[in-house]
Length: 123
Length: 108
Image 1 (cartoon, rainbow over the protein chains, first blue to last red):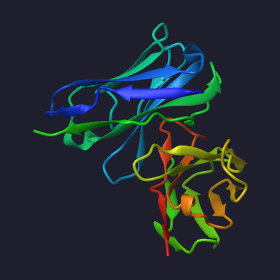
Image 2 (image 1 turned 60 degrees about the vertical axis):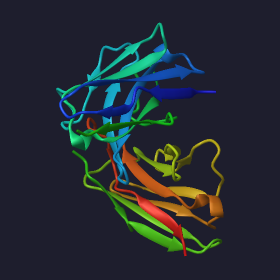
Image 3 (image 1 turned 90 degrees about the vertical axis):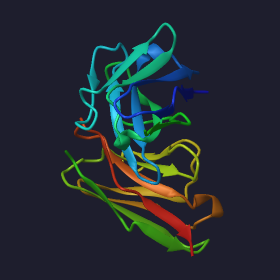
């Protein structure tokens, strides 16, 4: 079955950088778009980024554009999120999720999700 | 950006009773609307997509309806395992992809 396992979270000072990883298995990773979504402690869900199956198209919300970069290594079945210039408000559990749309037919929804990795931005 | 508004924020329901959750979109999203269930300490899980199609693994007591800007998630007879937070999500016009603020279904 599809499995997504995030890693790389931790405590980081404001202004510093962190890279998250999401290891995928159970499906042909190179055929599907992938997302990052985050959830601040006790709060709701916020979509963070999407990357197309081949890495050619990516989108972000205003809150992270210019600071975060989504990328993937299809040979390693791994998705990444490079987070720079981190702020206290970036503190959250970060989830990766698969888009169910095949190749160019991405749909913009999330199924399934990984278990998440916690990022805490604090001095 | 399409703003999603869920109501109520908290719904207190007795086991066996019916629960009705609402989600409103600030613009027409046709039926490009999904619902997710999140239990404490767990990742969200897709429950409904296409406004009314139940995802694999969820029983028939869960149903979704609506189109355009008004949507409803109904749980016909609440079981103990259904107490959770439910989020709606629009994927019609993006980026950005947007979520509602969630409805917590708690035991009355």
